[in-house]
Image (cartoon, rainbow, N blue to C red; front, side, top):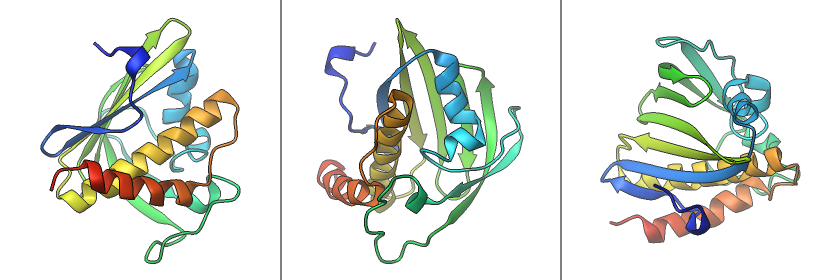
Length: 177
């Protein structure tokens, strides 16, 4: 069981190729669920893309990280304005759990658990293929979830790319070699 008083914002490796990260968000659970599954709301913190909420349904996520915050910060060299990823829903239990598979970068499960007036979000990203991917994904999920917290809380998020670059260095220190 998670001790909410000591909830750490950083993701941790719970298995050699599995990253788990948690956030406490203002409820209700249905609103948080909408931010996960509604493409228009999801594009405000992660990636756009319509999603049919049934097991086996394919969907495409479209990242435009420059549009997540104003200002976005300086996009690192080698990153494009847009990134697309084919995905498929592998498990769904509205409004508590969604799992999906990503081509070439593992599987993601997001679980929501009501905690009074708040909601505990637990994200587990499995089958990360290598350490460099773990540091990029750890920083990415961390930065994106920080934006989700800000959006749901009605506050302004920090510039995405500046946050991601800082977090990538931090995850590089935290992820074992």
